[in-house]
Amino acid sequence: MTTFTSLISEIQDPTASGSTKRQLRALTRLADLFVAGSGGYSEQQIQLFDEVFKTLVAVIELKTRAKLARRVATDPNAPAALVRAFAYDDVIAVAAPVLSQSTVLSEADLVVSASTQSQGHLYAIAQRQTISEVITKILIERGEPIVVHTVAKNAGASISDDSFRELVARSGDDSELALHVGTRRDIPRHHFLKLLETASAAACSKIVAANPKFADAVRGAVTEVVDDINLEVRNKSADHAKAKKKVRRLKYWKELGEADVHAAARAQNFEKTVIALSVLARCPIEIAERAVLNENPGVVQVIAKAAGCSWATVKSLLLMGVADRRMSKMDLDRARENFERLETRTAKRVLEFYDERRNAPTVASPPFALRAPADPEFSQDKLTDAVPF
Image 1 (cartoon, rainbow, N blue to C red):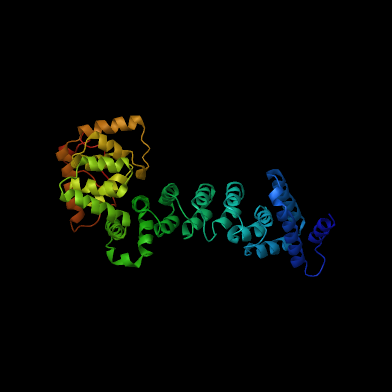
Image 2 (cartoon, one colour):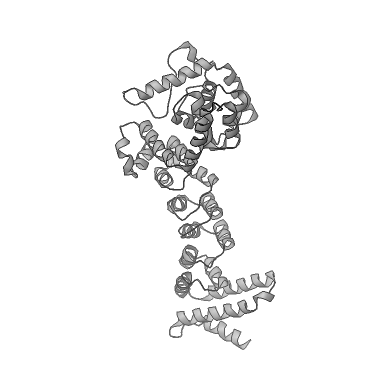
């Protein structure tokens, strides 16, 4: 008890020479006392110790507290209870050093901080050298733009498929975020393609500008730039190469059919789906990719009809998560009616028209928009709407 009381007094005494070091030593020794008997402590007692540290840290003047936090932030052997006390401090100058640097904090500690504390705390966590998918999900959901941008720029942040989807959705009206997301090396290809489809022309141009290897591809039309980027990324995709090899094998043995598209779509296998769909529809893979990713259900219906697919396969394509369509039963019923009205020859003519226009040496039209020509066969009864690719 004498030792305990002495340490408490030393911690609360800022007047002595070299007080910062002495207070740190006193806090560390106090933590060691707790750690020494931690094996016999109940969860309730451990929580009580955390509260004691939080209380003791709070009575130290702010300037000294910030110095102590900076000191323990880079110490891998610092007592966890002490580091946690600094991390939960409401003052950012105290919490930020440990939240952004300390390896002593557990995943659970970071979850609590990210879930309950201020944007300043979130910003500090977003700067950590490594961040798990669980933490980045919370940061992206709760964070203001500066936090989200920091996560997107952090190469050490692990981002889940769902979190990438959220980032891509937010990038539609945020060119800076689109640039950060589009230049991440770990972005899944279907999200990369979706980003280029939904981002503004200015954002796409910035993504291209950030990649000098694509500079020669810029010919004034965003569609051409995107196609060149897609080709580059596609060629470097291991998943795409694997799917392409399998589809080629099926095609060579004349086994490729609608069942392969259906199975790939049900399995949420983007790469195999678009490759098989493009082979059966005899259209460029860029068109199949855009059809699968496009939120407009009419787009993929045209490709599927040209490929000779049935409604069961089209339904599986429409329910693929990569497009995030979230179609209700009523939406699906309406899509089925439209699909059954659409004739195969009409769908094939749409693809032929698009391919001719795409390859024609003319001034580019607005990106990703394919409008049906003035022909009765392309009336509103045949197609649900204009078909944007």
